[in-house]
Length: 141
Length: 141
DNA sequence: TGCGATTATATCGTATGCGATCTATCTACC
DNA sequence: GGTAGATAGATCGCATACGATATAATCGCA
Image (cartoon, rainbow over all chains, first blue to last red; front, side):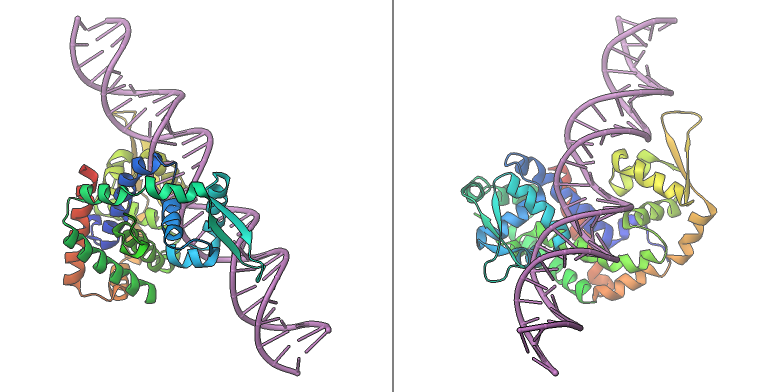
């Protein structure tokens, strides 16, 4: 049993993810952000000052990916990285004013992407929930 | 307007793609393949001896990604790379016996992934088509 | 027929992802 | 209170992705 590529759900996800990032690219270039950096900022905009581990659980990345990424964000002056006083093992990531300010400049992005998706909000929401369900099944399998 | 991460369709795709690759990982490790290498082989198993460009159009990757990937596959003895006699610009990728033989050893993978997805074939097919539709909208936007 | 434009790969630089391993810190339990 | 085990990040190595650019071969058209 060897499925052709267009029939494979994994390839649908794979290629759709790339197409999505391609849509985000020009929008994020304006802000000097990469896509995973934007995901991290999204988490911090909702709740500032989180540990590397807490960020990782939300964006689903580990320290091997996050540490260099966060260092680059620190170099760009978007966040600060500081060991937690109570538990020196933890590193707390906090938005700078510049990082906080990007929230406004990124506010138009969701509407842009929605429009380019060519789908109605309801359809997109339903699709998102199905994809999330699939993801959770795969994770627990 | 700043959506929380779990509400973002882009993140659903992003994290589901990673979860999917995580499921494939142990299956592909047995064959000594990476995920994109497996995608390329899938294309070649359906139709052998294709140019880099033709492969790229199907797996949605360009020569900057494919050339090094195909060189690694050549080093492992899975494919050969040879300039086309009629058009010396083109490089034709052809399965070796070892590359062809992997088709059998990979035959069980689709069923494994289907099982771990926790969904019925019909649901998965419907979901795949919706994701593909979204991808095509994004691409043409 | 010759030469600029086009096409097919290749190369380079940067940023992910991720398995494996290392280090520093903390916690439990004796 | 001291040490084994657990925990949080960091580091390393390798393989993608991809924009920008380079190079070689082919094509189109005056």
